[in-house]
Image (cartoon, rainbow, N blue to C red; front, side, top):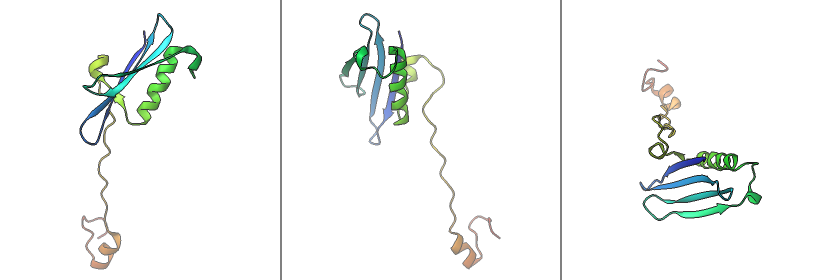
Length: 112
């Protein structure tokens, strides 16, 4: 059985989850989602509504879309030792070029 568990961090400190699995008995994809700590909402998707040929590929495609929206793998549920949460980009260092040229001070030694 194929299962995927994802998390999303809201700006207010709360989290959302998304989980997809294949129900082998019915051939349907079962999606659970909602706020972490709350009762999950469940959606069952029949084969006729798949955009992919198999339930496993359907789950992978839907999970891929969620990852593009900012979700990341929940390693506590999947047993992975490597966190897959994207690393934040380092802050950029900017210098007011015109002010540095006028005053002769580059505020960091980049120009003079």
